[in-house]
Image (cartoon, rainbow, N blue to C red; front, top):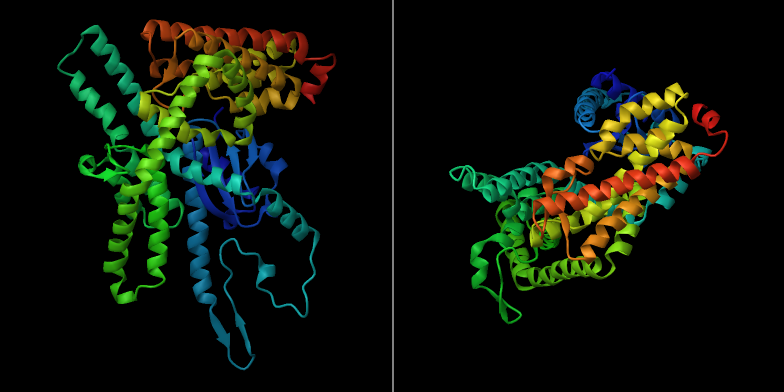
Length: 501
């Protein structure tokens, strides 16, 4: 039975320290992403035990990811936002009323901001003692406050909101390609091509907008500077002795351009008089960032983007089987830790350059290994009613490439099946990589879906039939190896008791 989104949202908030402890709310395809003011107030075990919560991933010193699954996450995120906004509005009203001074007593009531600890505003005599919670919080901060993790969070915030459009446009592009190849509906295919391609033609603008928004700049200024990259008139500009090409540098150039625009904007706002800010700051921001983008960033980002495409093609052409084995085998741990978001800019760059990313089908094999492992667990532990119920409910999502339900509900709690699922993913990746070495490249025109849901997005250099056959063969290989490895090696004696505990 499906959980009521509002009830699940309330239960989640109760276990993350209440709505007042939440500083930000966002979501991706399967995960609710929350920023929290006080990490020590989060009840991780209680959160994991909620019906409907598939897993919890720590994502830095003051944020976490609650795995809910596709579809559900959108509804629960909306409910969480409503409840957090209600508390924020109530706190703001109460805080305004509390700002008063008691004449003759010499004391004042100071309103506490949302998410602020009461201990932080209470006056203390002398040096305040450092409690155990403070020490734990500081340890968490030091362990998670790394530049790499911070960069991953920023990357996710920039690119994850673009995934729905990438999926929709990618599917339409695939349908249009089939119609063109079959010679059907010639009056409709130009319109479909326009609808499917328009977003990719302007994706740099969206990347620039999101980048400025994420790093504290004015979003529209980030989008305006990134728009320079795709403007047709840049073909008349010469940089480093060559004419620029519209779109050169792609999303990487847009990311760099918007970052620069944000820095320039912040520099201006600290120096320009308030009366002139509305005129000078946007002008200087667009002018300086636009010129640097044209005469430097576009060229450099273009070189980097070309290197990514060359490296991906070389990797598959020369070490395809090995590359597939490594990528398919390691992707489940990356998903579990939330580190797979770092690959989004690479996928997007390949789609811009070649029309598809050759890496996604390899990585999608991890889900196949997971499905095979789950089926083996079901076969071996079919008398464990609770576990089998979990597998039956999670398998449809797993077949469509959503692996978190099976990761957090089945393989990871059992231990060994997680490893054998990775083995299945490695085998499937090696299968597709082997055919890449033979010259049969398999790619995806969009990112997000995998498993059977990736078939409408497949593209390659040998036609749709061969592309689908290679990808399907990889899925079957992942299923088979994941099943066999788990059935024979992933479940030692006594595992039925452990699974039921």
